[in-house]
Length: 315
Image (tube, rainbow, N blue to C red; front, top):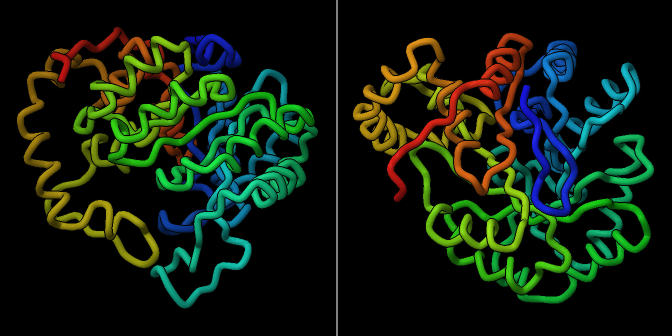
């Protein structure tokens, strides 16, 4: 497992992390807490030192599971990054097809309260990283979310501050790095073999300012593992019913059809590992955070850290 510093002010992290959305028990199909905790243990055993979660994942359940594992083995050098801004505390079941009536809330008082609740769930005295959770741009034009991050840092409740860039708004939100470089230690970005918009403006800006980059959705909800085809379907509250609906699935798979040469260049590595290594091959990127629901998935993911660098033509 390789390690790197997350930007010029960030902590040292493994280049492959653990994305903890799926283990929260909502929006990813059935989960088993004992298996989820075994997956977390497997990640840490493999040298993973970066866990990414959010308060809204499983409505606090993801953070609770992480806390259980940390209690069992100690925190050591593990960096835990969480997020706030999606208010689920008053969510109902009557809308959003299982997501509940979650509302974006980037008021200063709410973010401070949410951070304190995450601290309690995780059993920590300080959060390694708190990220604003993919807010709309209009929310970020107000001072309150940034004031909240400053206050939380001053109070010692967070060590580092980040912004999860909203999906498909990479260029539109790039200017925020300049404006808030004093508080932003890292950003989290949707980036993978098929979605490379961040290369245009966001990554050069992050490199210029020394802001760390966390790569999310590196396997495009599992699609780039090669496990899905045009007949794949998702049921229940699985968010992939929408994010990988038949139209999107067709579009993505059509693009993947032209990637056979890439896979042939790395015959000893799985499609999932190739996708993950690509995510940290760009010089702006530091850690890739695939989800993992089982120890077997996690072990395969973690091995990608030691792959050769993957170079593609810039877009």
